[in-house]
Length: 155
Image (cartoon, rainbow, N blue to C red; front, side):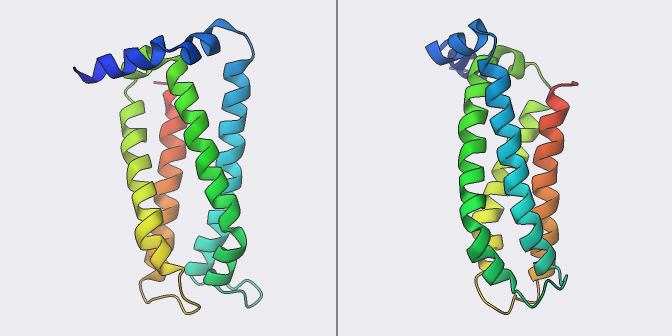
């Protein structure tokens, strides 16, 4: 079994066929995908700016993370589910797209980073000395996911 067969299998699923065979599912799913990305990155942007030392009315990065974490987690969930649906609708096409695999690699790196190092950086009221670096790297990774995702439509 090679990687192309996985892409083709996804495209051959009933869900993929249904999305491709109708006018509105793809644009609606993509709309939710992009809106979830905007909510997620917006919340994360505030937390990461705070980690990088931007003053926000005395609110710590840890408190901000507690308040916004629900938006981050729901955003990630919606992004992953809607992304899987979009993938199912055009697996064969994505296999040939030079921007898709870099997006998946950066997405994996961003998720691992977010749930390990970033989580540790925002865990305490006083961010660690490397907190600013964690915030900057977090933003870099997630903006990389978004840029590579946008490139899929142009590559």
